[in-house]
Length: 256
Image (tube, rainbow, N blue to C red; front, side, top):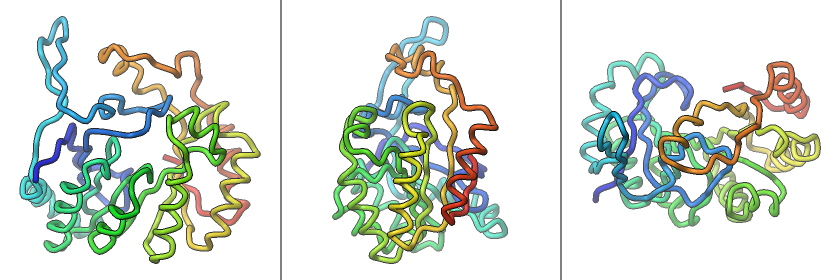
């Protein structure tokens, strides 16, 4: 089984506990307006022709054994820091066979495995991943179904169902909330999100990810429409205001 990876980030400290190596898989069923990895949307390897650099490939094929070999290069850094391997994207569950095979091989070789997911996949794939995943980083982008569809291109029903499934199986979950000004940072959405998570009675930690413009150059190079043109990054005071509101609902909040 071969998968398509478009980046490997070593010594990552924001993709789960400890020092981690993060594999970014190609393909995503969502089309989030604020996507900071627009090169991940396409499921295939892309060939781009840049004026000064010439042709550049985005993505390459790997097997699960290839993933294990890359992980072993960084193994000395994982033990003391409590780190390991994270799969991100795109949406890593969009390559289910490759992801399951890779996670299984890593776990059987004593690596800590994290899946960073939008939650938009079949519950069957999550079921297959349960024995081979230590922690899920699970995105909650908007609680209103219609607005979720408007800004991401998909309904949030399947996402919430999968979150509830993981909770029912007792898996460790950190919520990732991308804070997007004027889209999902309203009091109404925040209170709806925290109220929903409190009812699940399982989630303790929320990662607050403030919107940033770091991907603007990518859209230009990829000749893709940037839906966030003109949207400013939230200032620190506003970020802390949102953080405080979430914390008052009883959650531990980590910014970034």
